Image 1: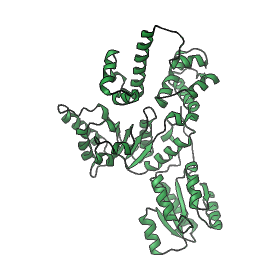
Image 2 (image 1 turned 90 degrees about the horizontal axis):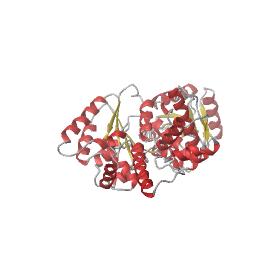
Image 3 (image 1 turned 180 degrees about the vertical axis):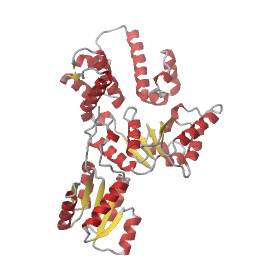
Image 4 (image 1 turned 135 degrees about the horizontal axis):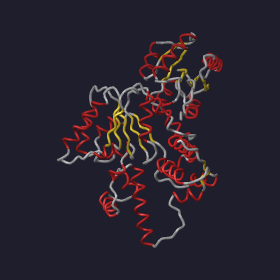
Length: 425
């Protein structure tokens, strides 16, 4: 079922001249653009996360924070956001300073209407904005300002070829974000080649084969995107080789995911600085579900809708008590774990309404009491299975979530006869 929607371009206009601000707003709204006026740079920065513009038009000469300072702050927070600069002082030094700072265009006041509109159309086209359905982000059901901020940043950077490192806890949707960026980019018709870095063995006996696999992936991604899943798990012996492959004029986009932020990776002596620079020109950090609990009802409803579409069965609904139980639960596996629980109760239960008891049972809160040893073994095995499902068989991530070292974690898997490869997507 399609969850697409139409929208018009959003333009933030910043000018401390009330008359000109009003005139620009009227002109742009007459062309069906959605416009947010701001009388100074501070106001612009305060509304940008809520408004999420596709383009900013700002005066150059303003009190307190001028247009150049605003431009630099926008570039820091929102890489890829185009900015058109206006000034009544149309001097060459002004133009040079604005363009050197990264302004998309420089126009002098009074601005001719058609000239302004032409630059607006050109800036929107260059930024990758498409006034068609927002299919690129359909996997993200959210009303969270934090997630919307990350999506807006992703959409802006999608219009460039900058590499992006997407970080966050397991299950927060890092790969979904990578695929969304690819869909929103000019490379959407190209290949999306995925490489699971955690599965590449950097040992001497496997090194040559892994290097060949990386080279083959880079070649297949020509004209498209290479996606490096769990790049922080890549063996040190392969990091230099990968950095070398990504160096130079290659026609591909690099997207990568990691459980750890760039500053954490940089502080790790086991990680290549060159590779980090190659994969993290832009950083997007996804919040855990605990920071976006307002999204639990939306995510649960989306999951039930998807399941009904897949099976052809009538869509089930959650009782208010069941929804409250989901919203208040701890989700160490984040969105992936929530989806897994909702699909389980929707698939196994009977009747149109899912009860709170069914949800609690799916969360491992059944009241039946086995012996202590049975309960401990069952809990341990179920816990390990859940970790492997959440991390899709990534032992490094699962061990970190369990706060155990890899050796002890492997011993537990062996004891409970669990094979990580059986959980890989």
